[in-house]
Image 1 (cartoon, rainbow over the protein chains, first blue to last red):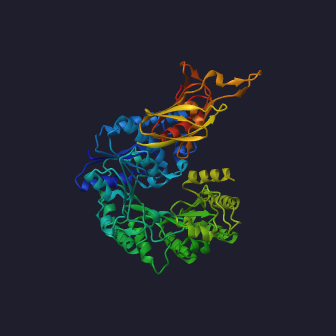
Image 2 (cartoon, each protein chain N blue to C red):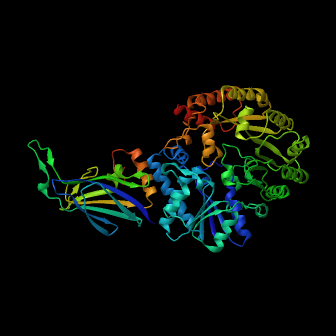
Image 3 (cartoon, rainbow over the protein chains, first blue to last red):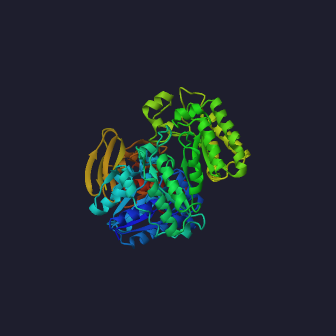
Length: 473
Length: 151
């Protein structure tokens, strides 16, 4: 065995991990062998997964009950024995988000204690997230501790093959895949996963049509990972969906793309191909951006419907055009109206993400957000709209808004502890936008959405934010 | 594996007599006599690392007490901090160290105050950020008990 691809706790899941399935197909395409081992799923289904541990994975200073931690370590040790029993030349640990860092640490330690000669490579976007306690990026902390053999940052599809060929010990920042390389990525291989473990009718297979984004929104860190928007041919993506449907009888797909309609030409091609070959058979969902009518004529919405688009997630973010313009979202209120109407007409559900407290947001802007929600709340009755209030604005590492020029422009106060990273950031230029104001706005949005029964998904996520925000007030 | 731990020591001098210590880090020894606060760099290059600080020149009569039993003069070494990156192991000294007099008897937790001739042995398992994590979890659960002992 050349590669054991290990998925570690914690990540929320209702599908087999796509990263592992893609990597498996990539290495097999070059004659190597690989196996996927999903310990995140095993963890979730075990009695080891206590609430305190799950909370700790998500918030590292919220320490778990020590006994539960010890049980988890014991469980990880058994998993490590299982991993080592495959005698893989390399063990690849997939760190999907920050939530997988603490789990990954335990797996690394257990593997190296059982077999110091085993070779471990890390990958995944979670490797680059900060490990708050140490104020370092997680991969730096791990590398300095000399406990893994290689780390692949960014995109692993091509680099993992190089690693298996060259057996190097290094940190490699893999360049963003070219369009040709993206188109050459084979259909993901999910053979190692039992689909029924991930739910019966609800199993949803992730699809990647593009990486990066056509927008450079000020608050978003996608650009830090994928500086350039690159997308696959719509026809290739359609064929991947068709093949996965034929091979696994999977009918639900969700796009990992930042935007499914980033490249309109390929989005159209994909819909056309699916609508022609398997009309009204599968369904897909993905993140979507409101487009003006001249860019997306009515036929595009019909094609989306016929190809099986069932839900689009839209980062509306704010009801204020002024705020969205500053964010560089680049769509107008008119675009929202057009897009919302057409999607509803086609029976395509919408899920809006909204947050409050963007630095320049004034009372009037916030009022626009409330008005927007009220305007479209009637779509809830037909189950065509739900809203996820995602929280109060917080600056993330690697986003344009944390660049010195923007920090300066917005008068964001920065102290030695980089408090601007927290909920408690403040602005000298917008002193009225206090944490209290932001929090109250968030709670008002949540109340309004609840009044119209618009929060029908991720209720726990919203409720967690409510609790968190109240606790910091 | 090579991780840097810095130990800060402060002397308590008795008149012109200053503490003399042997510092042994993973079998590499140094003898240090110090008049002012010092920072010792310790390279942790094993999985199980030991830092031994042996207080060499302390004798019984270095400690003088008044009629009420209060110490009036003394010769001592104070461990002020044991830092790894941003983490200080000092609050966990009880969990990671043992202080043994020359006669072999063990001194209870002194929070880093070395008032007897003897050796303070600090054990640090690498990687240190994992040890730090485990100590933090443990102490958040059991404030008054010792890490690694039965619960």
